[in-house]
Amino acid sequence: MNAIVVYGATGHTGRFVVEELVRQNLPVAVSGRNQAALAAQWGDLDIRPAAVDDPHALDQALKSAVAVINCAGPFATTADPIIDAAARARIPYVDVAAELEANVSTLARHSDIPVVPAMAFYGGLGDLLTTAALGELTTADEVHVAYGLSSWHPTPGTRAAGQVSHDRRDGRRVRFSGGSLQYHQGEVVQQDWTFPGPLGRRRVIAEFTMADVITIPTHVAVPEVRTYMTLEAAGDLADTETPAPTAVDEQGRSDQTFVVDVRVKIGGEERRATATGQDIYAISAPLAVGAVRRILAGETRTTGVASAGAMFDAVDFLKDLPLTLDLP
Image (cartoon, rainbow, N blue to C red; front, side, top):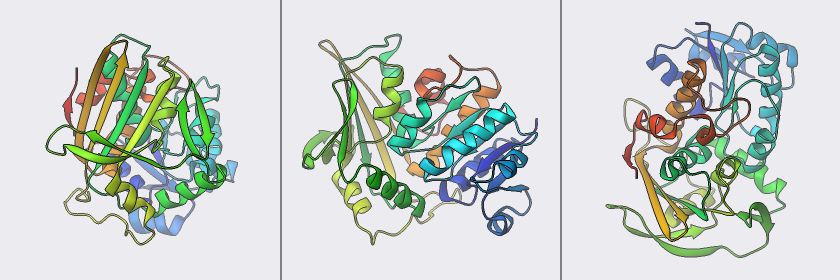
């Protein structure tokens, strides 16, 4: 097999993705704008420097590749040129974008190559859990996705992407309601959410809107999708003094733990699916790599541009991840 190219391989999530590919004995090449940084971190790998504003360099980086995983944010800048390069190379594209507007743009594209955005903790995992909860159903009245993070030490890439999204919205808040994405000036609302034990009852920010509100409605007919974040984690993100993640184990993961708690309402019934794990950035690696591996093996449910829940068998995918699961 020719190489799977990781663009943005020197970033925090990019490093996890490269190491996951190596762990799975999959051939990998690394790419990004800074050749010196790539060589310093990945000197023993196939290094293919390219800037996103240089189509020829991107074509060279993807030459003879079998897929590309884009880990370089802000994705408002990087997604389109790398998808275009993937289309020219006739190879699948996967990214780990959490930016709402970037994912809207990607999912609106037409493509005859597989394109899967938001294949990460935000956007991908909640989508897979929702799809697993629905089973064979493709409609719901409401979907609620609550993030029970013990803390959130954002990477520089997270902060940069967040600023891009903030600027694009002119400071407005966003929600998915009435079957569409809505921008508004409403106040931040708090409420209680009862997570599975041992996290239990916690205060959350309601309408802490993340990429799941974009991915889920692409294949589930649902008028309301809402996401929530534990108050402590939201406070960490808002504090400009919160440091970047610090590794605590041999895999490079931080001590952050998470619960993603999905509740799907269908008529008078509520279905629930939860996943518990460690480090939101680290879990994005097996999500993105698992997506590429399944695409290359032909283990997909649709073609072209699609979110995780539409493209893959959700239960099978989830059970292959390093998570503790509680599924219907």
